[in-house]
Length: 84
Image (tube, rainbow, N blue to C red):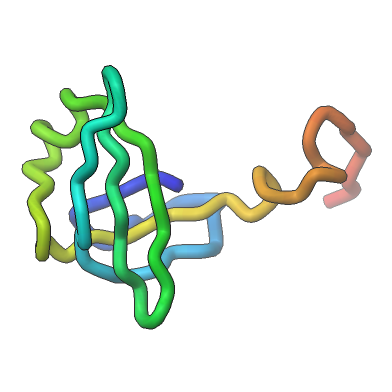
């Protein structure tokens, strides 16, 4: 899950969900960012630097970008040709 603070455009990822930061949970050298999107909560692991650069805080509106092929176990590690 990628996190954007502005509506992303020009992406190959087709799944963009708008939500708000619900929690920022320190996780070692990273921060788990929980994003409330409707009735669901998404989680994204970001570096502390990314959280600071994006000025993330609980309640901030954000956009979660999801590349669905990355979630497809059949698509992980296997490649196939696609004609365009």
